[in-house]
Image (cartoon, rainbow, N blue to C red; front, side, top):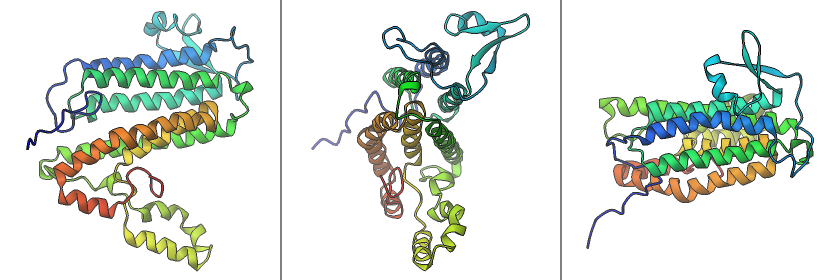
Length: 309
């Protein structure tokens, strides 16, 4: 019987392949970087207003001036409504637009750090193209949803704030987890070892400390539950980075278009990681770490989000 492994999916991560990637990382880097002004153009122009007449989205207060480097003005001026004075070039954003833009900047910055510093495996053209185009289309549709905020009964400023409060910490937690794992893997002493420290070893008891005061005042039955979780030393999730993706995918959609939009776009992330990327990394880890992975799975029952997935 043949023991040849099936060929890796060209649109996914090439697990265990650390050969040169060539130009795809450059394409991915530039594609994600260019994505920012393209999305800002959607945010500030309200496309399809002739087909779907609508009032501008709520502003949230007085406009904010975002200063633009003069060298970038000729290019950005073709996409964005820039304001030029004798000394500065600026883009006027409402506070709500600025919040959404900040979320995108953090998101793109994480991708740029990943592609230039954190990525270890070979990157294919399929992955670079799909990762750039798919993310750009998704974010563009979410930005477009915000331009309908004034007539969207499911959107509210509170959901925008909640989305930002969920999105940015989730992106930063994923980034921190990935940085820690790279440091762990780059240490020769850890060659062949499974990373179970840092965010990958973050226990439930750590999460519950933030709620200790309220739990202590709630009665003995809840205290028993708290001790049960803490004593089990369950780590949050085996693939905390994928769980963060699900959270900030939902959060960005919710911030732009309310809970239904969050469910739609967050659902795409959930489906991808549950039925594509997740099974792939589980199979890779099982093949690479064997008994160590079996023990880790017993200790960490949740793959992505504790108590849910």
